Length: 247
Ligand SMILES: *[C@@H]1O[C@H](CO)[C@@H](O)[C@H](O)[C@H]1NC(C)=O
Ligand SMILES: CC(=O)N[C@H]1CO[C@H](CO)[C@@H](O)[C@@H]1O
Image 1 (tube, rainbow, N blue to C red):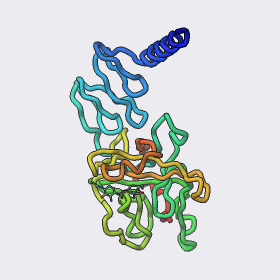
Image 2 (image 1 turned 135 degrees about the vertical axis):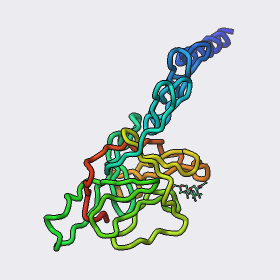
Image 3 (image 1 turned 60 degrees about the vertical axis):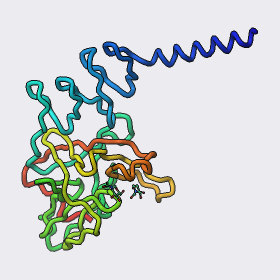
Image 4 (image 1 turned 30 degrees about the horizontal axis):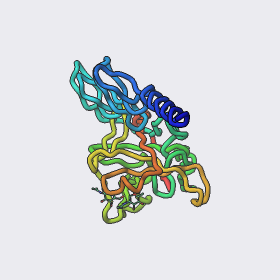
């Protein structure tokens, strides 16, 4: 009997503890770890660490939209080159840069670039990864003739072409990227599953760089150890080149 009573008390304690974590939003109860309540009326989910904003009852991401006179409005396209930083306050690489290396965009890595000796001091520093976007496509902001196009490779990692080559593997995706002024770099392919950051593998030769993958319906279940992130656009002046070429 004493034992039963204890168990009941423990269960009650547990129940009130779980309920205690919930909060009220008007008539609804919600978990503040997963939702934000606007005006004690509207619930919006927290996605990639961003509590979505509310525009007259519609939830939106500030990486893509703004709210003008209660109308949800797409941010304008960014017209200058930009760098990107990871945004998700819940993970260690929040605020760290997207870095070009090995013909891929990595997160929190070292930018890899090359400057031919005959160009020498005319080369940009090559230490930061500068990107440019236009009309749904994107490329590296480089001086090398022909440029370096950016694309989603067949595994939905962000990649870029080698200098002096236009080769892109079959099955890659070269369009469908949104780059929003004051917002983010968004993958509009595959129904908006967004970007994920995958931590370095212990067996992957060390290093602090995380991998960037575009999530979609097919690969979502294989990306369980990865965390949703936004890529924040940091505009740089028109005409800024990040490197002669990225390697
Ligand atoms: C999702 O990504 C995988 C690569 O990870 C790709 O093979 C597949 O075609 C993509 N699915 C869609 C619907 O685009
Ligand atoms: C079906 C498919 O291509 N799945 C891929 C999803 O993404 C992970 C991580 O990059 C790959 O390992 C899977 O092969």
